[in-house]
Image (tube, rainbow, N blue to C red):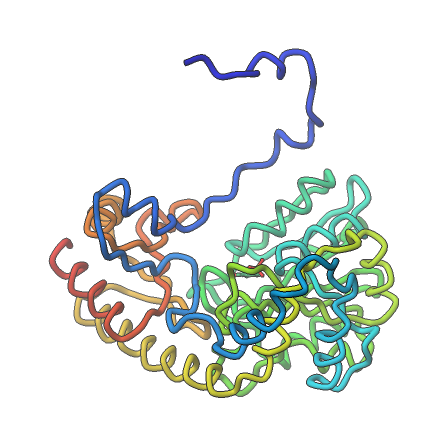
Length: 371
Ligand SMILES: *Cc1c(COP(=O)(O)O)cnc(C)c1O
């Protein structure tokens, strides 16, 4: 069959800026692998989801909210905002709740990037920062991480120009799992021109076990021009319902609210996130599972002599070797999905999410057989 409407592109031109945008490559979904290879059980360790599942408190809150679905949600997610203000010791006008952390990145880009303003990102890092910049026709300055994928604030500072508008720091960084120690972060902020906005993406903050880590909240409290980006998609296990938030100085929040859609966060998402925020049992169990799982993966990789980067997150970047692409394919055929790291420039690496003990074991055993 011919593709209906393909010729329209000849006459109606899309914005030229869109030529710079590459489609996002997500972890392969479970259903796709099930269909493609005719499998029942699939182990997905590709998107840094919480293998323990969603917060049970969130599920209860969703149930309780269902009867009101004919009503529009609260456009400011006030219940959640108030809970966050309490939790973090900030005011309610220091928060914006968004349809996942991804939406926050787009709002920041729309609100702050004039055409030609530069953003600085570590390389490799989360691809959504570049997506937001490309939408706004902003050049992206990539600063390589150092050996062992360590952050060097020095190198980011050296990349600042008159045109720099935003610096993105992902800590722990996706896909490397490395983080920026608090002292280095502070010294970086103190030396940065005040006209530069810093986005600290702390999506994986709950998994950090280092004690010199900052989730950005104290910096917001102290008045730095910082947005701390948080998500409910990772430890809270709510990736499917889409909710995240930014914490920032009130003037920044006011600006972001100008570009926000009136009802960007749905009612179920708000209720779920508000309940999950204080589900200590679920958070604690998830954290424990992750710490044990990281060690389990490290031990497995050592046994196979595969170098890995020590991670503060719920995934590990591991060097599989020259057979990585073949092994990635064969793992898929067995219903094991990991993330092939080629799109970050590492054709010999995988990024593997930490799963349950059993999932990690299934993966390690298959890896041993296929290598
Ligand atoms: C997962 C993730 C986010 C947020 O994702 P959402 O599901 O849109 O909330 C943000 N930053 C990083 C680095 C992530 O890995």
